[in-house]
Length: 164
Image (tube, rainbow, N blue to C red; front, side, top):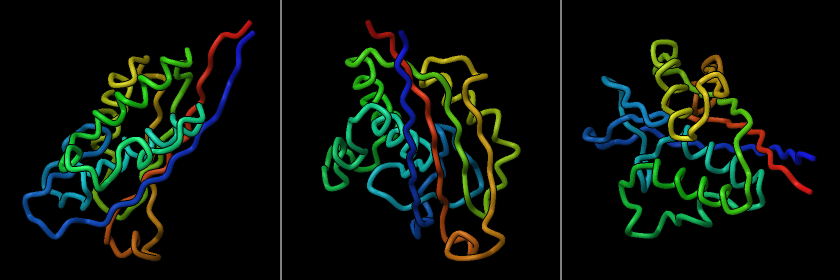
């Protein structure tokens, strides 16, 4: 018998005022765009994904495992957080079935980076590229995202494990 669980994640970061911040989405560097403010590299894609994976398996959330006040995570690559979440999945014999990611904001245009982000996320998860979907939308200039003050990402995952 196979057990399935669904998890969702949401992450939001404002654009950084520091000019030296790099924009990283799903582990992919997006050139020519302002970076996001945050304790780590503020990769909203990986942060939302980590929360979705942990949520599906009852593992809490990103802040519980990797506190934003912890000095060792200052400017950390969010791939470290994803590796921690994958370790949690492995302990429970969970594996990723598929991932759906929605990046929300006015900029940057995601189209030119969609394939690279999906490939990066699939590689980090150790799954086939066809199991990761990346899409983007705007808020039609409504709210802080519509004013291009930051970016958000929603993640939905399906995980499974064999039982019995």
